[in-house]
Image 1 (cartoon, rainbow, N blue to C red):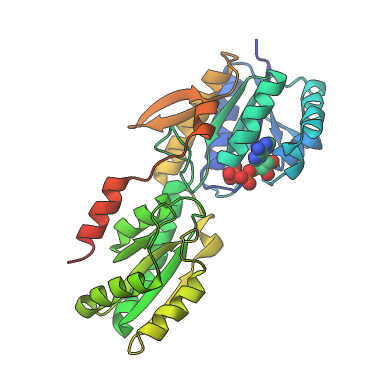
Image 2: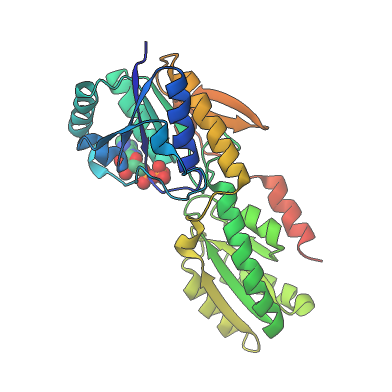
Length: 325
Ligand code: ADP
């Protein structure tokens, strides 16, 4: 029987992590399972940064962004000798199951660790990138899209008043999910993502010129990992080729990560947290809980790290069609 579990948040923070921690603690309490919070992600596992989490200790956090457990990256965890230290620390604390909130990097570490030491483990997709294979949903994504929307709407006012062309860089080093959703929701004329290469800068200029003739202002959502390179250099290039236009860029940066979670990120985080406790009780090795077509699902963690989640091609195509004429 599982008597005590540990929770940690790893990699980038995501709005909704706290709602999920709260749900795990309360669901575990109902099942007479003690919960230890492991601070600073895998680093805290190496350093025994353990705190007891009682149902009262997670009061008043459902609406807070970030993570009360803090998060970090930990290069040492990629080496077996350090993972062994982490395992011994868990044994010393009598922790017999782990719930990990993080993105694909954190899931890789979780999968390796769980298999190496045969410890029951459940991963919960928690990344604003929403790039975990096997789940439509990831904690934080919807809040981040909302934040981007708010910013782009404001920039749009200036772009159309001054008839400017704006590149707006959003997060997404390897994936364009955020850019596509934000692009659709804001009516952006162009969405550039890492998954689809643009032939060269001149073909991009041609596209922008065509749109600009009709619309007089252009919003381009630019995911940071696009094949054309840094957004400032691209902006300079386009400006040189479009001397009569005013071309600007704006990098939204870390405002995309924080903030109070939206309704969906609170509710889904609560559901996933509850469901992860139901799974850990079964003592299976390395599982992931997620949401597909609005239903909670469980899958092997291995699957989520072996495959890349595809972009929503329909949404991308429809966005291109309806955001232009
Ligand atoms: P995210 O989980 O948001 O994708 P990272 O890719 O930075 O964030 O990964 C977070 C942490 O997961 C890393 O700092 C490291 O501790 C752990 N990790 C990532 N890849 C591995 C790996 N191959 N083996 C062991 N641990 C890993």
